Structures are given as structure tokens and as C-alpha cells.
Length: 172
Image (cartoon, rainbow, N blue to C red):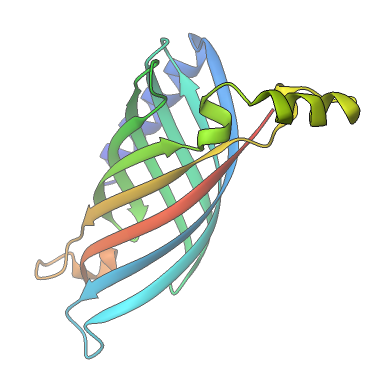
């Protein structure tokens, strides 16, 4: 496990040297975990800080970490691809703690992924702003597979699977 994390971290650092663009974000996340314990389905919540490091126009590394309940801390490393035309993304990777493999789909906010209306443009101009000053983000959905039922069940906090729903706010 440490070797895998080391390899992923090394690839992330190496990719950042050739990065075309970097997005920083804050994400709030709500999820449900299916466990092998007495409480079969348990809720969770996290607040994460993260980076998307683009290695091409459509390919990126996603790295995020933060505070979580019930695990106290969490961290995810993944590789993703973005459709330039729609702004949608798909990311796959590993949640380091609690350990899970994940697949995540991102759908951008409509107001940020499309041209703003004339009415919104006028409102922004009156404030001395423009479209680029809108706080943009995306909605994310993920499905994750844990290690419950194996000898390594403690690494995933006895979780078989997690389903999450989150919102991400990008910083300029």
C-alpha cells in the first residue's frame, strides 16, 4: 500500500512539472457507507481542499485532502479526463484513508459552463465585474469500493462501499 501511494505521489509531482494549468478548489461532501458493522449504512461528511493539475487540455491529476466524519481525515488521489465541449469529467483513483477505489463523475454548474445571459451581463457590469468573477464549481457523484470482508478491513474502516454527492467551488 505504501509503495502504491509513493508511486501515485511521484507521478503527481512529476506531472505537475509539465502541467498546463492548475485549478484549486474547496469541496463539501456528503456520503453513505455500507459497512459490515452493526449500523449497516452510516452517513459521512467531509470538507476537502484540492488541486486539479492538468497535463493536457483534457487530462488531469486530482489530489484532495481534508477533515471528515467519522474518519477524522481523508485523502484522495486520482487521474481524470475532462470533456472540453461539455465540461464534464470522469476521475478514477484511490482514497488513501479510509482506503477505497473510486470512480467519480463531475458535472459543471450551468451558470459557469455556458455563456451568461444578457441580463446577468448587465448586472455584473453595474457592479464593475465580469463573467470570470463568478464563483464557479461543479457537482460530483462517486461510487467507491472498500476492503471490508478482507484481511485489510481496518484500512477502509470496515466499509464495503461508499456513495458520495458533493459540490466543488473553484478559486481563480
